[in-house]
Image 1 (cartoon, rainbow, N blue to C red):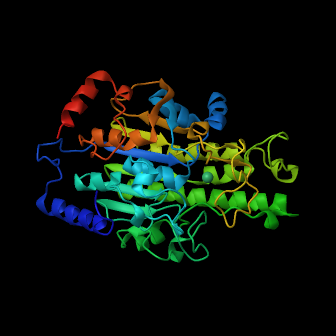
Image 2: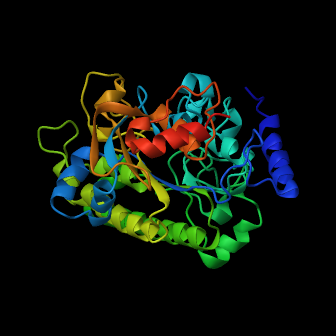
Length: 417
Ligand SMILES: [Zn+2]
């Protein structure tokens, strides 16, 4: 385990070393690795809910997602108990439980979760150390950004003007405070010039007081803002993939989850049903996936037959259920939003995430039944694609069953370093 303060320092030193010595083509054991490294793109969708996307897939309304599923492996992704974004994304990054990696929720010890709390080495650091170029955009709980062998633009939990605690609000790039949202710093002006003064996270949800008497107007305005943020984010992803291609790229969307929390299409029998809100835009939440599918279409322009594509969600989201403490409580500004759906149920299996993978030696049209894949398995599986053995503290396993047999054996051979 590395100490917190030295950790970014070690990465930057190593990256400089790698660049200086021209060792990009070798792995840590000094053995010759293939000259061009695998191209891996990971797309995260916060709270992608199979209950909503399955019927949309059947109706043919998610053509890009359907094409990936047909060409790859798909299924549920077992998440952690009481899942939320910072907790699960840090688990995905480190392949260790929240209690071990230090990021146990939105707020840890009274402080908003941040990268300085990470007690275990994340995937982006392991990859950087092995000379893999890394690009990350809007991944939750990556603020302040850490040095990588590439670039990093932070995501959910970035602090800024009007968003001092950084929790579920949306500071603009120019408003960021209390740390860097972009590494290297020189990319701030480049993004402002070529993409715009982007919102780092999705919009904050309105409070019950704000909504009262203005429900329809506020819902429509808020959804317009969500769409504006998504358009910016799509432009950012497209710009980065075009102008800063990296071996490993991870990009995350968070508006889907945000919309689901208070505009999930619930029925009169559900807890929290209020026709003044629930009947205004029944399609608001499904529309998030229709729009996500277009974002995926933009990303797919950068995905060729030799690219590994992973589409992941940290958890699903379901209408309120179970007699658990604070059923309406969700981390927003004071817990005042009329939340009708959530994901931090004690049993994480109630709200499984999603796992969809496609790539040159990944099986086609295969459905993973039950909970074969877990959030712990993502990092070891990605490391194996680069021939890197998972560090000892990682709890997950390589998902060998998603690969065609012959290539898997080869990959296993490469990984013995
Ligand atoms: Zn959420």
